[in-house]
Length: 159
Length: 134
Image 1 (cartoon, rainbow over the protein chains, first blue to last red):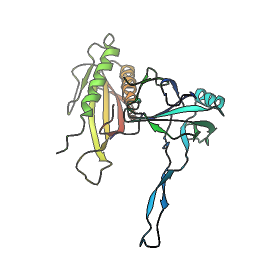
Image 2 (image 1 turned 90 degrees about the vertical axis):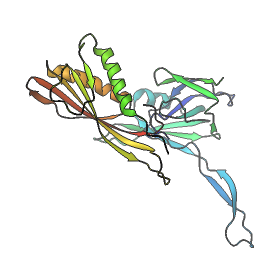
Image 3 (image 1 turned 45 degrees about the vertical axis):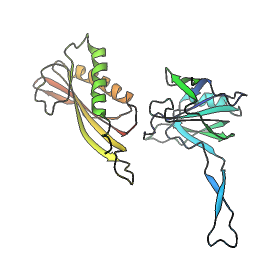
Image 4 (image 1 turned 180 degrees about the vertical axis):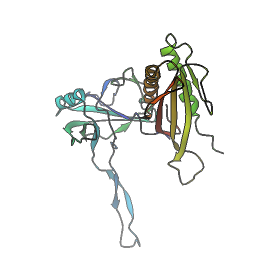
């Protein structure tokens, strides 16, 4: 069990070879919360008139838009505005060392950003809306993540 | 039987001792970090007194046979016999070290000098799950 502290979301411009997630990545936003990149899987009703109760089989996951609220900082905001309509790769890291020791998920999508409501008693926040275009894949043990400053990350294939 | 929860108090004290000695070895060679139950008057200056004051178990599972997480609170008091500025400077470093471990800080009002002892008090709290890396 681990808490959600230092869960992170990284991005890079889309690599055509989507099965290779190695390379240089950048932190997208300093999140306050991090929604799931995966949608809920539905069930398909396969009941017949003979069944006394509804019987189901697994369906497919719903599509997801991740609304990631985080601190509104000029550098991150400006970068995301520049990235609008650019196809990006994303990586979500779970684990309190900030490097995804618990889980890493990677997918391709698009980001759009909006400032949130300004409040006198809270710091400014913004929300990055990430359209998830591909099925997120779990790559926890396949890649290693390192960083020196918590903003730029280097991802390499695990030996 | 499930193993005990991690000894995060030792981690906090060790990290405070290491970084404070590293920062202040030249300026405050007598600086000490202590965890005694009660201090009436420190023997060295500055003294950083670390007390784990509240650890509340949270996020119990239905099995209930292991500790999943706790909310840990530390009170850390900095004493100096030269000036309030010294105590505040070390107190600010304590806050920076605790923030590096993601603790939330509450600075209590600074106390006036009592018998030529200046004191700065801070309380630091965070949720710690069993597998967290501090």
